[in-house]
Length: 200
Ligand code: HEM
Image (cartoon, rainbow, N blue to C red; front, side, top):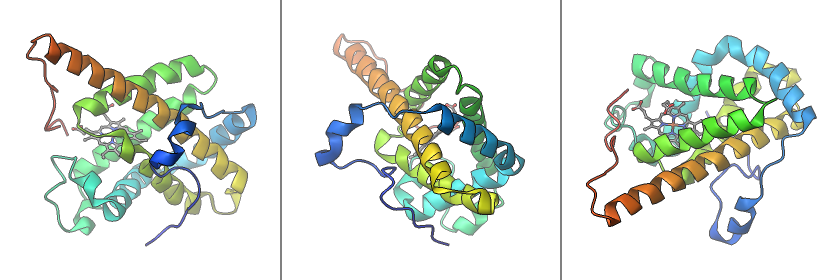
């Protein structure tokens, strides 16, 4: 089932738009309030949302599935809807969103969490160009849960949170990548410790 949200700026940026990547998305107190209130409702369905997000991500962007060692060979995406591994992964990602929501009043704590996540994504070989898709699919998955409580303002608030987090993930990814390059340049044998991301 499709879910069209276009023009939301969650898709990876084209090179011509790259200049705006440095602008920090601004989370207002109104955004924060709306996100927290809506999370109380979304929370009840997090396992379901996690699965929907990833099945849709793999449907719309099969290249993302290839990044996951455990899922890359699964042809029938319907099978993934009942996969214990995908459920567990979806819950890990939802738990990250839960922590992010809990840290909205202390953004420096959210910042360090998201930068660290970006660093680990370098080790998973999951590049930033794909991160925006997750926010898009999250919004598509939670909209039906909130029904008439979903508003354009709420959509903007969630979109801003995902932009905020993915920008910091990108920063962490780049930092880790540069450190790895530096280590390799000085002759160390350091490599991505988890190229195959077998940890699932
Ligand atoms: C907003 C975007 C994303 C968020 C918030 C997110 C969050 C997470 C979290 C919380 C984990 C659990 C492990 C950890 O904490 O390090 C994880 C693991 C992982 N993510 Fe993401 N992720 C995002 C986007 C993506 C994308 C787009 C891909 C693939 C193209 C991806 C690939 C992976 C892989 C391969 C793992 C490791 C799985 C494992 O072996 O356990 N992630 N992600």
